Each structure stands twice: as C-alpha cells, then as structure tokens.
Amino acid sequence: MLRNVYSRLRTATNASVLTVAVGIALTSASVAVQAAGPTMTEAEFEASKTIYFQRCAGCHGTLRKGATGKSLEPKTTEKMKDGTVKTGGTLKLGQERLEKIITYGTEGGMNNFNDIMSKEEITSMAKYIQLEPPVPPEMSLALMKERHTVFVEPKDYPTKPKHDRNWQNFFLVIERDVGKIAVIDGDRKEVVAHISTGYAVHVLKAVEHHEVLHAKDLGRFWYVMGRDGMMTKVDLWQTPDKMKVAQTQVAYDARDVAVSGDGKYVIGGGYWPPHFVILDAETMEPLKVVSARGVNIDGEYVNESRVAAVYDTPKAPTWLVSMKELGQMWQVDYSDIDNLKMTKIDSAKFLHDGFFDPTGRYFQIAANASDKMVVVDTVERKLEAMIDVDKKPHPGPGANWNDAKCGPVGGTTHLGVGKVTVWGNDPKGHPDQAWKICYEVETDGAGVFLRTHPKSDYVWADQTLHPEPEVQQSIQVIDKKTREIVKTIRLTTETGYVAVHIEFNHDGSEVWTSIWNRADSKKPNGEIVIFDAKTLKEKARIKGLYAPTGKFNVYNRVNHVT
Image 1 (cartoon, rainbow, N blue to C red):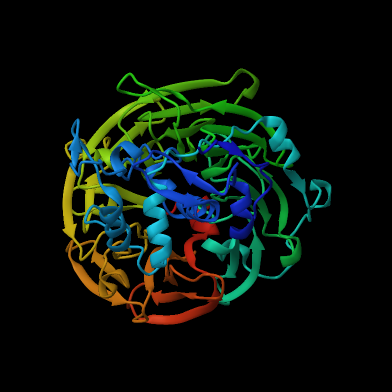
Image 2: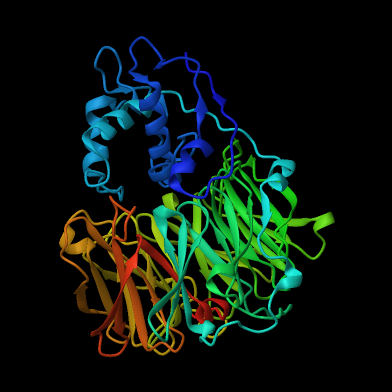
C-alpha cells in the first residue's frame, strides 16, 4: 500500500531539484492500489508525480479535485471491473481513454502532450492518475525562515544604477523550465543577465504607481514567484552578478506575488499549502501566514483552496487575493498586519487571473470554469458585476482600450474557444455599456494572452492552445476601430514550437512576442520576435533564450499600462 509520507523537502531552484522538493518517500519498490487498479514501480510513480506537478496540477489541482480542468480523482479515472462507463453519474475513463486524452488533448482547452511526453511517460501518467493522490505536507513559518537567504544586504544596495542602461525599458522574461528569468535591454536588444529563480516562474511584479501610497525607486525592485513557491527579489540597479539580492520559499506550489503600495511588504499566494504569506519587502523575511481554506460560495468546506491572483489595489492600502476554489476575492488591508482586516467578497469559481480597468478602481478577473469575468469595486470593497462570457476566459495581464461605440473597454481571450470577448468598463462615463459585452471577435484558436497599448491601433492575441501547428504558431492582430482581424502573423514553422504572450515596449512602438518548444527546454530553444507596432513588420529577433514565455516591461507594468 502507498503511504503518503513525504521525504524531507528542501529548497528547489530548478527542475531537477524539484523532484526532491515534491518527493514522496515510498516504503516499497512498487505501488499497488486496488486489485482492479494499476500498479507502478517506485521509479515510475516518482517520475509521473513530478510530471503531474509540472504539467497538470495547475489546472486539475494538487489533490486532483479539478478546477479549470476536470476532476482526476480515482472515482473518475479508474475504469470499472465490469466495463461500465458510468456509475452514479460519474464518467469512468480507464487506461486506454486516459492515454488518448493525454496524447491528443481535448476540445475544451487541454493541451496535447504527444510532443512533450514519451509514450512510456503517457502510459505511466494514465496509471498515476488512477491512484489515490498523495497529500503533500504543510509549510510552517519557521520552515520558511529556514529557507530565507539574503545574497546582498540592504545596507549594501547602490544609491544609483551601477550601469548606463535604460532600466525602465528592461524586459524581465520568464525562462520557464530552467528556473530562470532573463533581463533584456529593450533599447539595445541585448540579454543583460540570466538570473536563477524558482522553477517555472509564473509572475513577476514590482511596486506600482499607487494613488494612496507612494514608494521610492519605482520599478527598481522586482519580486519573482516560481511554481515551487520560491520567491526571489531582483534589483535592476545592480550589476548582472548581483541582481538576485534575496530569496525565500513560501510554498511547495505557488503562482502569484504582489507588493504593497508603500513598498514595505510583499505577499505570495500558495497553491499548496493553501495559504498566503506576508514578507518584509526589503529583507524578504517571512512575517505572517494566513490560511486560504474555508467555505466556498456553495456552502462547502474546501481544503485545497488555492490562491491564484494577488494584486495591490491602486486606490487603497490593500491587496486583492483570489481564492480560486472558494469563489471569493479577499481584500486584505496591510496597513496593520498584526491586526489584519479582510473583506471576503463572494463571486464565482474558479478565480484565476485578472487586471484593473483604466481608473484602477475596478478589478476584472476570470472565473475560468464558471465562464465568467468577475468585477470587484476596490473602493467599496464589494462585487460590482459578473459578465457571462464564453468557455474558460483567460485575460492574462489583460487589455484596456477605447471603442467608438462602447467607450473604454476590456477584453479577454479564452482557453476553451477561439474568441476575444470585449466588454464596457466605464460605469461613470458610459453607464449603459458598463459590464456588458460590447462585441466578440472570432479567432482561429483558443489563446492564453492578449495585449495592447494606449498608443497602438491594435490588440494582439495568441492562439497557443490550438492543436494545429499553423494556428498555435501564429499571433492575430485585431484593429480597434474595425473590430476585425487585420493580420495573422506566423512566428515560426519549426515542428514543436508555439507562439505565446505579447508585451509592448516602453513607448508602445514595438511588440514583443515569444516562440518556444514545449518539449525540450534544457538548451536554448526559443526566441523573442519583435515587431513594429504600426507597420506590423518584423524588426528583430533575440535568441539564446530557454522557453521564453511571459515578458514584463518595467515602465508599462509599474504604470498600469495595458
């Protein structure tokens, strides 16, 4: 029998160490579940467990109860002995069907993995998800403090940049599977540094312009969250070898980070354990842990209540913390962390990622599996609206622009359908259009990100989730005036490569996109393609990058330029 006993967990900063960081100590050489269930060797189980964490847990959950993706609990995945496919209304998938789903993906937005996993790995993964999921351990504040490292003491921080580069036009680029970020000079198109961080970085954030509070050195310090819960502080004023100044592991699986408007605190949200952690932003010392477990909007207690998006609010000394499985936004007041005040705002499941409207008052976040965009009024600290959209909205960092009919609008791509949905988001100036769908644009494939800039005539959207290479390797450009796709740009024709993510440079004159190979990221396997934002013609390519995904322009991000 499998005993859910975890080996001692240690700091993980790359994929190889990650296997230890999420490892399970098994008591025998093989794993057996029920008589009718599959068996796996210890090596097969360990390998599949690591792949599941890297590739599957984000959508299906650590305990496999489902969220954006469907439940993968054994009651769903294991086939019945008598061959029946349903029992009690639950679909029983079985080994053969599971292997096909993993190999080819689904129309609902799941990737195909035939170019990422070998046939043997797919077979093992299908077995693994028919077994009871191992339960990871908790993480105490004391353990976080043990995993806190300072590389450069704050007293030794430089008082001015130690280089002559335009750091406000730096791009911080996620090099996903090698546990690094690249710092790129946006003016010179040069890689300044590759910085070791947590595994599969998801988000980077800095102190942002804030209406109530203000911080010095705006955009200088960045906080990086890896999927292994490793949070890294980066100082862009340093020389490349000194840019990583501190690091703390706050979870075993995590997604987001945010900084308080006064620059005093940083918050990290955990998928597992389900909690958020408040740290001293200067030293990265962990100060306070708050559980995310609770009762969801259906009145059910949820043990795996994951923290997805975490954002500072421009108009109040608060963070917005999205409780994915609870269907709640928690507005957390950080003005007194010893006596923490939180407002719990009910909305819809499963809250994932979002962005502010142009005024900074309203936060627009996708409730993926509920097919809704949720809008929170951060001044009144209450739910403002819920907008019914198509399958699994995913705006990423989002996009705001002006429409001739609807006025200020926001938009999202979708994980489950090729479509960009646009809604009005100006209740003061255009109340009749506010929080209503203005128009939709059919795209060739499901996507993950869209982006624009106030100086641009276009909205750019990727189509990363479409199974056909011609589509997933292309970015589509939508004209803001005509509401039509004016150009489809294929970034590469090389087998196994996809196009993903869009970011503008400081002044909006360039558009940066990524191409990368999902299967092999242990060597430089991707590049950034740069386009002229007006002519839509390619200008340059930056090579030598490892699976470059998200790109964060310093000026645009700290100034809420969407």
